Length: 200
Image 1: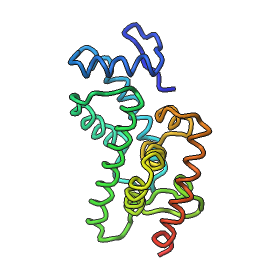
Image 2 (image 1 turned 90 degrees about the vertical axis):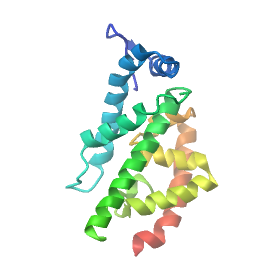
Image 3 (image 1 turned 90 degrees about the horizontal axis):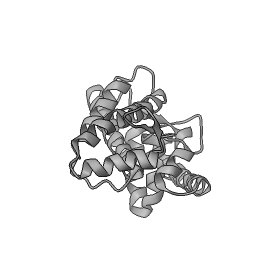
Image 4 (image 1 turned 135 degrees about the horizontal axis):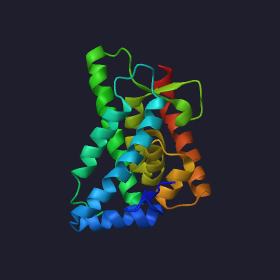
Protein backbone atom coordinates (compact mmCIF):
# COMPACT_ATOMS: atom_id res chain seq x y z
CA UNK A 1 0.00 0.00 0.00
CA UNK A 2 2.64 2.54 1.03
CA UNK A 3 5.30 1.03 -1.19
CA UNK A 4 8.70 2.45 -2.02
CA UNK A 5 10.89 1.86 -5.07
CA UNK A 6 14.60 1.28 -4.94
CA UNK A 7 16.99 2.82 -7.48
CA UNK A 8 16.27 0.06 -9.98
CA UNK A 9 12.52 0.56 -9.71
CA UNK A 10 11.96 -2.64 -7.73
CA UNK A 11 9.11 -2.41 -5.26
CA UNK A 12 10.13 -2.61 -1.59
CA UNK A 13 7.86 -3.18 1.37
CA UNK A 14 6.81 0.00 3.14
CA UNK A 15 8.50 -1.07 6.36
CA UNK A 16 11.83 -1.98 4.75
CA UNK A 17 11.82 0.82 2.20
CA UNK A 18 10.62 3.92 3.98
CA UNK A 19 11.81 2.94 7.46
CA UNK A 20 15.28 2.08 6.18
CA UNK A 21 15.56 5.31 4.24
CA UNK A 22 14.29 7.35 7.20
CA UNK A 23 16.85 5.69 9.45
CA UNK A 24 19.68 6.38 6.99
CA UNK A 25 18.51 9.98 6.55
CA UNK A 26 18.38 10.50 10.34
CA UNK A 27 22.03 9.46 10.44
CA UNK A 28 22.94 12.09 7.84
CA UNK A 29 22.95 10.05 4.63
CA UNK A 30 22.02 12.58 1.93
CA UNK A 31 21.63 9.84 -0.68
CA UNK A 32 18.89 8.27 1.46
CA UNK A 33 17.03 11.59 1.45
CA UNK A 34 17.35 11.78 -2.33
CA UNK A 35 15.73 8.34 -2.62
CA UNK A 36 13.14 9.06 0.07
CA UNK A 37 11.81 12.37 -1.23
CA UNK A 38 9.97 11.03 -4.31
CA UNK A 39 8.37 8.30 -2.18
CA UNK A 40 7.10 10.57 0.57
CA UNK A 41 6.08 13.26 -1.92
CA UNK A 42 3.93 10.79 -3.85
CA UNK A 43 2.30 9.53 -0.65
CA UNK A 44 1.66 13.06 0.65
CA UNK A 45 0.10 13.99 -2.68
CA UNK A 46 -2.23 10.98 -2.52
CA UNK A 47 -3.29 11.92 1.03
CA UNK A 48 -3.77 15.60 0.09
CA UNK A 49 -5.92 14.76 -2.93
CA UNK A 50 -8.11 12.49 -0.83
CA UNK A 51 -8.38 15.05 1.97
CA UNK A 52 -9.25 18.00 -0.25
CA UNK A 53 -11.75 15.96 -2.26
CA UNK A 54 -13.91 15.98 0.88
CA UNK A 55 -13.73 19.75 1.36
CA UNK A 56 -16.28 22.26 0.10
CA UNK A 57 -16.22 23.24 -3.56
CA UNK A 58 -14.07 26.23 -4.36
CA UNK A 59 -11.60 25.47 -1.56
CA UNK A 60 -8.72 27.87 -2.08
CA UNK A 61 -6.04 25.42 -0.92
CA UNK A 62 -5.19 23.04 -3.75
CA UNK A 63 -3.57 19.59 -3.32
CA UNK A 64 -0.26 20.75 -4.79
CA UNK A 65 -0.04 23.67 -2.35
CA UNK A 66 -0.95 21.43 0.61
CA UNK A 67 1.64 18.85 -0.43
CA UNK A 68 4.37 21.43 -0.96
CA UNK A 69 3.79 23.04 2.41
CA UNK A 70 3.63 19.69 4.22
CA UNK A 71 6.67 18.46 2.31
CA UNK A 72 8.74 21.52 3.21
CA UNK A 73 7.79 21.28 6.89
CA UNK A 74 8.63 17.58 7.01
CA UNK A 75 11.95 17.96 5.23
CA UNK A 76 12.92 20.67 7.72
CA UNK A 77 12.61 18.03 10.45
CA UNK A 78 15.73 16.19 9.25
CA UNK A 79 17.09 16.06 12.79
CA UNK A 80 14.13 14.00 14.03
CA UNK A 81 15.08 10.45 15.01
CA UNK A 82 12.42 8.79 12.89
CA UNK A 83 11.43 5.52 14.55
CA UNK A 84 9.76 3.98 11.51
CA UNK A 85 7.40 4.61 8.63
CA UNK A 86 4.43 4.79 11.01
CA UNK A 87 6.14 7.54 12.99
CA UNK A 88 6.79 9.53 9.82
CA UNK A 89 3.23 9.33 8.48
CA UNK A 90 1.85 10.07 11.94
CA UNK A 91 3.87 13.28 11.94
CA UNK A 92 2.75 13.94 8.36
CA UNK A 93 -0.90 13.75 9.46
CA UNK A 94 -0.18 16.22 12.28
CA UNK A 95 1.52 18.57 9.83
CA UNK A 96 -1.44 18.42 7.43
CA UNK A 97 -3.83 19.06 10.32
CA UNK A 98 -1.94 22.19 11.30
CA UNK A 99 -1.81 23.43 7.69
CA UNK A 100 -5.53 22.88 7.12
CA UNK A 101 -6.50 24.46 10.44
CA UNK A 102 -4.21 27.46 9.91
CA UNK A 103 -5.68 27.89 6.42
CA UNK A 104 -9.23 27.72 7.81
CA UNK A 105 -8.37 30.36 10.43
CA UNK A 106 -6.94 32.70 7.80
CA UNK A 107 -9.95 32.23 5.53
CA UNK A 108 -12.35 32.73 8.44
CA UNK A 109 -10.62 35.95 9.39
CA UNK A 110 -10.81 37.23 5.81
CA UNK A 111 -14.48 36.35 5.45
CA UNK A 112 -15.45 37.39 9.00
CA UNK A 113 -17.24 34.12 9.68
CA UNK A 114 -18.75 33.51 6.26
CA UNK A 115 -17.87 30.43 4.24
CA UNK A 116 -16.36 28.61 7.22
CA UNK A 117 -14.43 25.55 6.08
CA UNK A 118 -16.19 22.33 7.09
CA UNK A 119 -15.35 18.65 7.26
CA UNK A 120 -18.08 16.11 6.38
CA UNK A 121 -19.36 14.75 9.67
CA UNK A 122 -19.71 11.31 8.09
CA UNK A 123 -15.91 11.19 8.09
CA UNK A 124 -15.76 12.03 11.77
CA UNK A 125 -19.00 11.31 13.59
CA UNK A 126 -22.32 9.60 13.10
CA UNK A 127 -24.62 11.92 11.15
CA UNK A 128 -23.71 11.81 7.45
CA UNK A 129 -25.82 14.80 6.44
CA UNK A 130 -24.10 17.27 8.74
CA UNK A 131 -20.92 19.27 8.36
CA UNK A 132 -18.47 20.01 11.16
CA UNK A 133 -16.61 23.33 11.10
CA UNK A 134 -12.94 22.44 10.79
CA UNK A 135 -11.94 24.67 13.69
CA UNK A 136 -14.60 23.11 15.94
CA UNK A 137 -13.24 19.68 15.05
CA UNK A 138 -9.70 20.84 15.81
CA UNK A 139 -10.74 22.12 19.26
CA UNK A 140 -12.65 18.92 20.02
CA UNK A 141 -9.70 16.84 18.87
CA UNK A 142 -7.44 18.75 21.24
CA UNK A 143 -9.78 17.85 24.12
CA UNK A 144 -9.90 14.22 23.04
CA UNK A 145 -6.12 14.11 22.87
CA UNK A 146 -5.94 14.97 26.56
CA UNK A 147 -8.38 12.15 27.41
CA UNK A 148 -7.08 9.46 25.07
CA UNK A 149 -4.16 10.16 22.71
CA UNK A 150 -4.80 6.93 20.77
CA UNK A 151 -8.38 7.89 19.93
CA UNK A 152 -7.26 11.37 18.91
CA UNK A 153 -4.55 9.90 16.71
CA UNK A 154 -6.92 7.73 14.70
CA UNK A 155 -9.18 10.74 14.10
CA UNK A 156 -6.17 12.77 13.03
CA UNK A 157 -5.03 10.05 10.64
CA UNK A 158 -8.53 9.65 9.19
CA UNK A 159 -9.83 13.23 9.14
CA UNK A 160 -6.61 15.12 8.49
CA UNK A 161 -4.32 12.49 7.02
CA UNK A 162 -7.05 11.09 4.78
CA UNK A 163 -6.15 7.49 5.60
CA UNK A 164 -8.56 4.56 5.45
CA UNK A 165 -9.17 2.36 8.48
CA UNK A 166 -6.72 -0.23 7.16
CA UNK A 167 -4.06 2.40 6.48
CA UNK A 168 -4.55 3.96 9.91
CA UNK A 169 -4.23 0.53 11.52
CA UNK A 170 -0.99 -0.01 9.64
CA UNK A 171 0.41 3.36 10.73
CA UNK A 172 -0.65 2.80 14.36
CA UNK A 173 0.71 -0.75 14.31
CA UNK A 174 -2.57 -2.25 15.49
CA UNK A 175 -5.01 -4.71 13.96
CA UNK A 176 -7.76 -3.49 11.66
CA UNK A 177 -10.35 -4.64 14.22
CA UNK A 178 -8.67 -2.57 16.95
CA UNK A 179 -8.55 0.46 14.65
CA UNK A 180 -12.25 0.03 13.81
CA UNK A 181 -13.15 -0.21 17.50
CA UNK A 182 -11.13 2.90 18.36
CA UNK A 183 -12.62 4.74 15.39
CA UNK A 184 -16.17 3.89 16.55
CA UNK A 185 -15.34 5.05 20.08
CA UNK A 186 -13.75 8.28 18.84
CA UNK A 187 -16.70 9.01 16.54
CA UNK A 188 -19.20 8.45 19.35
CA UNK A 189 -17.25 10.80 21.63
CA UNK A 190 -16.98 13.45 18.91
CA UNK A 191 -20.68 13.16 18.07
CA UNK A 192 -21.53 14.05 21.67
CA UNK A 193 -18.84 16.70 21.91
CA UNK A 194 -19.68 18.43 18.64
CA UNK A 195 -23.48 18.23 18.84
CA UNK A 196 -24.00 21.68 20.47
CA UNK A 197 -21.51 23.34 18.07
CA UNK A 198 -22.76 21.64 14.90
CA UNK A 199 -26.40 22.42 15.65
CA UNK A 200 -25.85 26.11 16.41
